[in-house]
Amino acid sequence: MQTYSRITGTGSYLPPNRVTNQQLAEQLAQRGIETSDEWIVERTGIQARHFAERDVPSSALALPAAQQALQAAGREAQELDLIIVATSTPDMVFPSTASILQNKLGISGCPAFDVQAVCSGFIYALTVADAMIRAGSARTALVVGAEVFSRILDFNDRTTCVLFGDGAGAVVLEASQQPGVLACDIHADGRHREILCVPGNVYGGQVLGTPLLHMDGQAVFKLAVGVLEKTARATLDKAGLQLSDIDWLVPHQANIRIMQSTARKLRVPTERVVVTVHEHGNTSAASIPLALDHAVRAGQIQPGQRVLMEGVGGGFTWGSVLVQM
Image 1 (cartoon, rainbow, N blue to C red):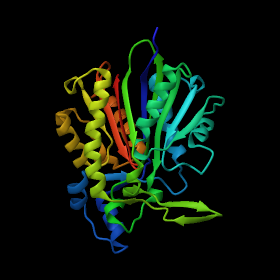
Image 2: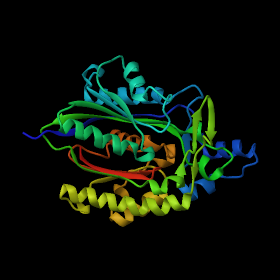
Image 3: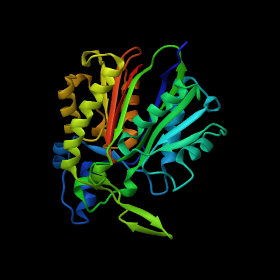
Image 4: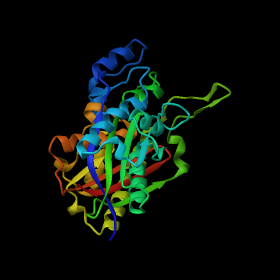
């Protein structure tokens, strides 16, 4: 009998420091950088974001999100046999944030590793976990997206520093005889690596390059809208389903304009698009599981419904996963 994987629990966490557009504008004004709530909302749809304290790493955000997901699934951490963390802001160069999270969960033994695909990271990680469960390498997996993007933002660049925030989202994925993950589709094109990147690295204890986020917003927008439509259609083709079969679209929460444009191209009604970007900004790999958990806990997404999740990020990377809850 064929083995499938199903999402059995979701969880999320935002650090308590909520920074509104007005608060951020006041902080930037002290640097001589001019922006406003109206300017940010009009261009992005973002009203606030959450910033972690300086000494709070990604694993500290991942832990409560993971615990929530485990509780929702009715599982104990000891039952996990796979942990994957999607992050672009790991606790340290190594070991992996997943290994650190494993220790914080009080368990050991199961494989734990990170996936680095920036804002597409959760889609990549979910695809890997699904493949490992289908192959029989795992039965109960924890998949987390966790980021502290505030540590890599250039607060002298108003076009990027207003976009991002910190947070974590998680799902428990379990082996099942009933289809859950229906199809996956992931891609990358390194030719576009420079339009969204952090062009710095460590050498001999010093930082080479620039360890702060750089983005060509117009180039990212143009690429994102095109590839998000293509990957959504590819995933539906793999599942043998039509656009009309989607109950919910959970896009990467990057920019309301990208999300609305993608929904129009896919003919998904606005009321069927999960939108949380106004409350937490772009949390990179955390944004999709954050939005998914919000919709589940709000009673929007119901058991049995089909949910299409899709993301695009630096690399350039993109992908989508179709699940039946």
